Amino acid sequence: MASSDLFKTLLYTVNNLLQQQKYKTALAVVKGFRNGAVYGAKIRAPHALVMTFLFRSGSLREKFRAIAQATYTHSRNLACFVFTYKGLQALQQRLQGKTLQSHSFLAACVGGWLVFGENNNINSQKYEAAQLFSTLIIIKGVGLMLTPETLQQAYFHNRKNIDIFCISYT
Image (cartoon, helix red, strand yellow):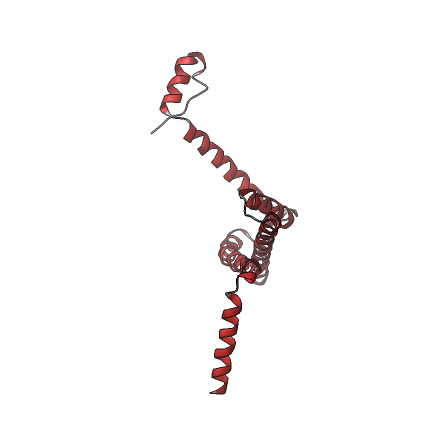
């Protein structure tokens, strides 16, 4: 009975501590680290499992070691990135007294450079994926800017160059 009261008191104290506004940013940074580690493991483990058994040769022990190493590296990198990102955002907000959109951009750039700047197999795959996604975003953005009216104007103003400017709309 006494341990139940002690547990309730401890739970009340911890909940009260977590609800205080002055610890909000520090708890957000710690929570971001934890969530980055968990999400990194949840995403990378199944991917590493499939890719290792499909494309890697070696004993079963070597394959499981490779899966564990890839999962650990990805989880650690993601956790460190989120920790750095959230920490830098909180620092910028505290220094300037308000939150700006540029804070997110700068925190992501610095965090990405610090965490993913080293050259290894995991990061080189992320670099290739980032190039692919950037290209797709640019292509989609250009496609959204082009309307049938702008295409028609381009056709009437540049009839001789229309072969270069072929985009179909469905």
